[in-house]
Length: 85
Image 1 (tube, rainbow, N blue to C red):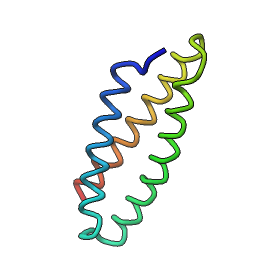
Image 2 (cartoon, one colour):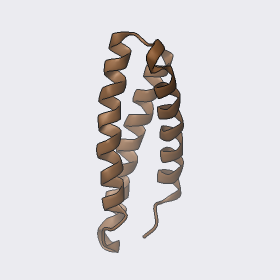
Image 3 (cartoon, one colour):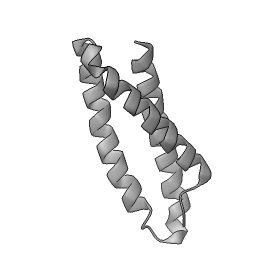
């Protein structure tokens, strides 16, 4: 099963926000850099999980994608909070 459209869209949003925050990291406060580091670790973990989910058999894929969607929404919201400062 391919990644659902909503997961692809969230992934693109998270990647864009992530790139923005990485560029601004050197200008950020220590707290913001710490939060970025925490989000980066979560991103790496989630990206590994996303790749694993892509290989899951069809009958469990829908449930897995629902969990992936929730995790991506959490990451998106975290990057947005960081961007707002």
